[in-house]
Image (cartoon, rainbow, N blue to C red):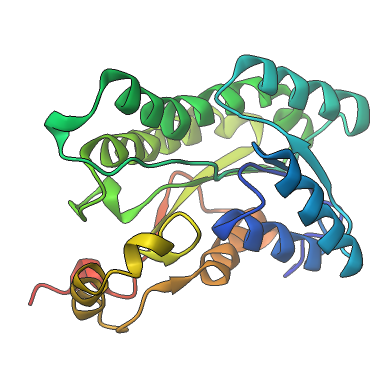
Length: 252
C-alpha cells in the first residue's frame, strides 16, 4: 500500500520547489500526473527532464487563478481521464511588505492565488474526485497560517483561510469519498524563498529558532503529501500536518 500505482493526480505549481518535488515523487510511486505552471517554457523543460528520467507526465500551461485556465484543465481531465484521485493545491505566491504598504491589487492577488483558487479548483474538479470514490485533496499551507513568521499579513491570511477551507471541505465531502488534508511547511528551500534565505539576517533567526537547525528540503514536504494521497492514510481527513523541524514547539 506504500504506492500510488494507477492513481491519477493533478498537481498545481508543479515545475518548481515543493510542486516539482511532488511531481517526481508521485511519478516514482506509480501515479499518473498532470501538472500545471504559468510559464510555458518551464512546463516544456520539465516535461523533457521527466521524459529523460523515464517518468513521463503531462504538463499544462495554466494560471489556476483564472477561470479560463480552470476550464482548460477540467476539459483535459474530462477528455483524457474522466476521474481524479488526487488534487494537490500547491500553487502559491507571496509579496512581502508591511501591511500599510500593499496596494489593494497586490494583497487581493495573494488571496486570490493562495486561497480562492484552491477552493474554485476543488469545486470545479469535485465531480471527477467523487468519481474516484477514494479521492484525496492535499492543500499546501504554511506555518504562517498559525504563527507570525514574517511572511506578510496577506500571505498569512490566505494560508489560515486555506486551513479552515481544508477542515470544512473534509466534513462536507467525506460522504463522497473525498478526504481533504493540509501540509504546513516552515521555511523550505525553493525558488520562492531562495532570495530571502540568502540574507544572513533572515536565515540566522530561522535556523536558531528551529531545533533541527536547518530549513526543509522540498522532497521532505513532498513525501508527506504523497503519504496523504495514499490508501495508508485512509482514516486521516481534515488534518494539518505541520512540518517545521520543531519550530512551533520551541518556546525558548
